[in-house]
Amino acid sequence: MKQVKRLIASAMAAWLCGALPSLGAHASPLANWQTCAATGNDAERLACYDQLAGKMPSRPTMQAIAMQRTTPEARRVSPLSQNWELDDDAKQGTFRLKPHAPNYFLPVKYSDSPNNTPLQGTLLQSSQGLEPIEAKFQLSFKAKAVEGPFNANSDLWVGFTGTSYWQMYNSNGSSPFRESNYEPEAMLVFRTNYDLAGLTGRFINLGLVHQSNGRPEGLSRSWNRIYAQFGLERGNFAVLIRPWYRIPEDAANDDNPDIEDYLGNGDLLAIYKDGGSTYSLLLRNNLKSTANRGAIQASWSFPLHGRLNGYVQYFNGYGESLIDYNHRQQSIGIGVSLKDWM
Image (cartoon, rainbow, N blue to C red; front, side, top):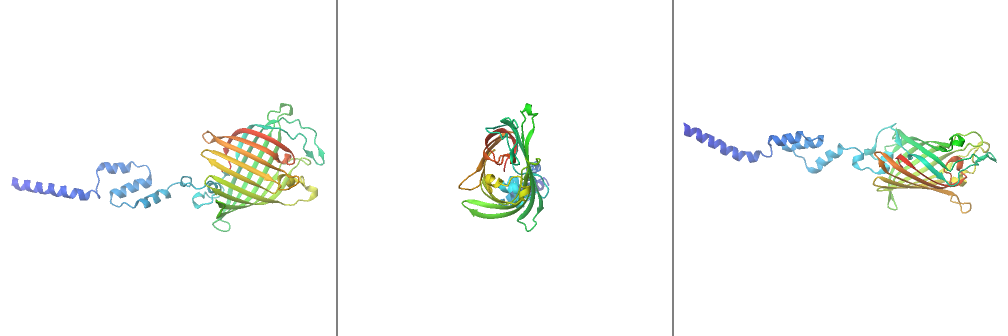
C-alpha cells in the first residue's frame, strides 16, 4: 500500500513538472499580479492583466490605447493649433477664456520722446508734462463662441485686448493713466493645410476689429477695420500676415483721417519658441515710397518662476498707442508676463 502511494505521488510530481512550463503563459506567481495592481496608469494596468491572462495585444495597439488616454498637450499639437484649437485633439469647446495677444505688466518703460502735445482737433494741446518713464500693461483674451458654424474646419471667436499707459512715477501730475486703448474683435477662423516656402499654412482668420481710446472730443482716437490673417508655421516658428482695410467714416466724425498714413494697411508678426523662451517681431509699414512710415516692436519672454515669465519689449516708430498714432518715438520696457503670442 505504501508503495502504491509513493508511485501515485511520484506520478503527480512528474505531471506537475511537465505541466508548469506550459502554464507559464497562462498563470503567473502572485508577485506578478501584485505588480499589475500597483500600476498607476489605467491603460498600462489593464494591459498587464491581459498579458498575464494570455490576451496580450500587439505593441502598436497598446501604444494606441495609451495615446487615446493622453491630453492634447501631451500629444505635441503645434503651437498655432493649441492657440486656435485647429486640430481635433486641441478642441476645448466654446466659451472657454484663452489668452489672445500677450498679457504683461511693464513697471518700467522708458520713452526717448514722450508725446507731450498731442493734436486736439486742429490745435496742439498744452504740454502735459509727461515723464519719460512710465508703466504699461496689457490684458488680452479670447473665447470660441461657435464651433463649426459652416463646417468642421471653421470656428467663430470673439476677443478683447486692453492696453494702458500709466504715468506711475509722475507725482506732479497725480500719476494719471495718460492713455488706454480698447480693442474688441470678432474672428472667423478657417483651418487650412497647405505648403508655402517651407511653412505649413494652418489657418485663415477673417476678422472685424474696433479700436478706440475713449477720450473726449479733440483727443478721441478710433478706427474700424476688417482683415484677413494668414497663419503659417514650421515647428516652433510661426508667421502671421495680416492685411486690413479701414472701414470709411464720415469726415465730420473722423478723429484721425490720416491714421493709415502712419499705421499702414497691415502687419506681419514672426514668433519663435526656443524651450521656455519666446521671441517675437511685429512689423508695420504704409508701403509708400514717399513719406514712408511704420513701426517695429520686438519682445522676449523667458522663464522666471512657475508660470510667470520675464518680459522685455522694444518699440520704434509710429503708433505705440492710438494717441501717438502720428508721433514717432523709441521705447523699451521690462517687466513680467503670463502669456506671450503662443
